[in-house]
Image 1: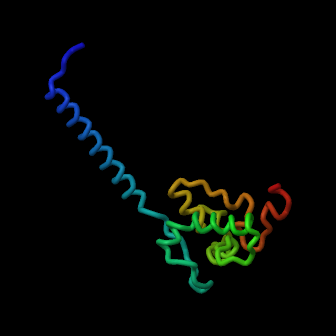
Image 2: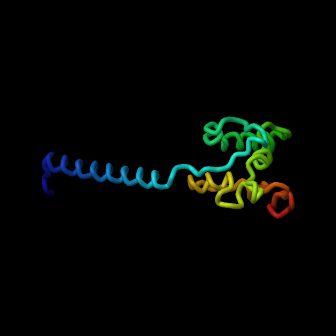
Length: 139
């Protein structure tokens, strides 16, 4: 085995740091070119949201999960947080959906952050339609 000096290791460390800085700079450039989070239309005339936008972005999965537990496990109905209320306020004016188009409320953000949107396999994502679960297709 060849003995390496500490100068050799320092040079390798400098190369790795330079590579890491370059990678970070490229990542920042790509994110900046992407234009940030998608702009989605909000309809204030449909009523107030449960919380401000920052809180909803951060906590909506937790809120929905807790409500699912209360409804499914504990049997509570008529809760403050209901997916149907989200759809009724945030459905697009043209598609009447939160998932049908790439610009619809839920789908736009979930596509942007590359998070699977699977709520609507069982729940309705369009105003005035029946969910697959309620129609028997989801069982």
